[in-house]
Image (cartoon, rainbow, N blue to C red):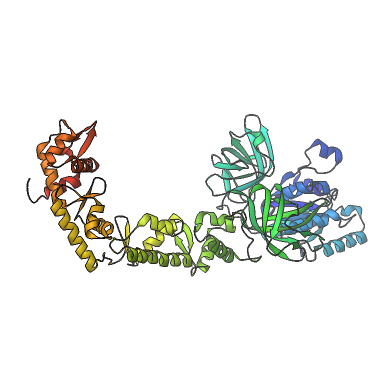
Amino acid sequence: MILGTAGHIDHGKTALVQALTGVDTDRLPEEKRRGITIELGFAPLQLDGFGTLSVVDVPGHEAFVRTMLAGAAGVDLALLVVAADEGVMPQTREHLAILGALGIRGGVVALTKCDLVDADLLALAAEDVAGLLAGSALEGAPVVAVSARTGAGLDALRRALTTAAKAVPAREASDLFRLPVDRVFTIKGTGTVVTGTVWSGRVAREDAVRAFPGGTVHRVRGVETHGHAADAGVAGQRVAVALAGAERDAFTRGGVLVGAADPWAARDRMRADVALFDDVDITLTARTRVRLHLGTADVGARIVARGGPVRAGATTAVRLVLDEPLIARGGDRFVLRAPSPAATIGGGVITDPLPPFRRASPFATSGASVAQRLRWMLEEEAAHGLPLRTLPLRLGVQASALERAIGELSDVATRVGDVLGLRERLDATRTRLLSEVDAAHEARPLDRGVALQPLRAKLGLADVLADATVQRAVEQGEIVIVGGVVARAGWQPRLSADDHRSVAAIEAMLEKAGREAPTADEIAAVAGPRTPALLRMLERDGRVVAVGEQRFIAPEAWRVALLALRAATADDRSYAAGELREIFGISRKYSIPLVEACDRMGVSTRIGEGRRFHWARLPAAVASFLDSAKNAP
């Protein structure tokens, strides 16, 4: 668990941490010289009856609020420090507002330097603090008077911290791993080391992690917690992670380590709910520049709301437009600061870190439940569905909460493999599918149906949803699929009386033509304008054979011609076109299409101007066709 200090400059935060832990967190020479904390400091605090808290000591000076925000990221419990001899000061108020914006609701107030004031002044300082806490994130927090110099009140402070720590829910170690980076350095023989607070999940030696920005993957060489080697670091711990093959310059504060196999992605567009502090006299338009602090990152941003500007006094659903892509998760809290003059103006919570479009609209309202946000996402991405593996990130929930949300939407959501689909869209698409098949039957009554792949593409769904829609229609007995062709169940091509007469004319013409296969146009001159559709049907049913360039022959005439060819040729030589014309007993005009048909069927191979035959290894379909001969030539 992480305990973060907060409070005005020179109110004794670092001295108090040293008195509690024995660790001086001011490690930089500049900090020693100036007597103030500039960078983040870290120390372990052992509490009887609880265990170890990781203490993050943050700067109190206004100029270092950015550093304070980086330290406050990931804090579970706050230790607000107020000096009894000065009382509540500007940074006290700003730090308390930041704690509230970050969603930190547990903590203790230390009224420091109590040895420097008398009882009356101490009582006034306590009253000042009580007024500050009223209505704040730490309302009701215990206030303990202490002195880091004399040790007065330290035991009482430890007891108060123990009680507060026990009330904070433990983080889930089985969650997705994420660690915002707040320090980077190198150690000879070890290489690049990054430190931070494990926000969620766990990291262990030999794990593969992905570093953002950049997205590079590294192997974890080792893990330490407060200077001691550990097998793993878990959520709520301060850790140092040594990375194999990592360059020092590739990492800065604001970066993030995540599990390499997890679906994290950096985005510069996100949805969020934003609230400005009540005492802020500022209006945010789509052109207003602000600084957004999320985790240890600090980026420029603009805020776009549905109904115009964002004003104090209300929580507003917005789209965040960031200067740089960030790693975020649904439920992440952030702080907003005005760049000039620098001031903390509000904060918010991420409601969708991975919107599907760059100009995705803000959600309809702020404060939406997980189930409501899930429904909006489903409706927005109905054509593609929602990959289930990304939803814990987008919604900011773990598996059990995701299942509950899906259960709440059982009337509108349905699982399709590893995708969540919108039932209404899938049902409407199935209706459209059936309409398309019906229209194809109406327009082409002689065809078996419509080709599956073009039909599937017309549905306008992602492949997995389109396949599921088609499969559902098959399971319901509404359609059948044979050979990649979709038809209504029970469908049979329909021939009119004129079609029957045309078919008879076609078959009579082909029988009379024998091996002199006529063209489709020649057949149409006899059988009428529906000849192309009728020829497709007859070819499909095996009642005609297409040879050459749009020429057709009766099956029996073709079989007899092939048998004659087999009787007159051998596999060990090549035959010229003239020889083949003589074997067929027809002119070149008709023999060439038959020879080319042999090539397409795998009966022969063209060698220069001649043909070599393969009677000993005919394709199975051709061999079967020849074996069904009624008469030898």
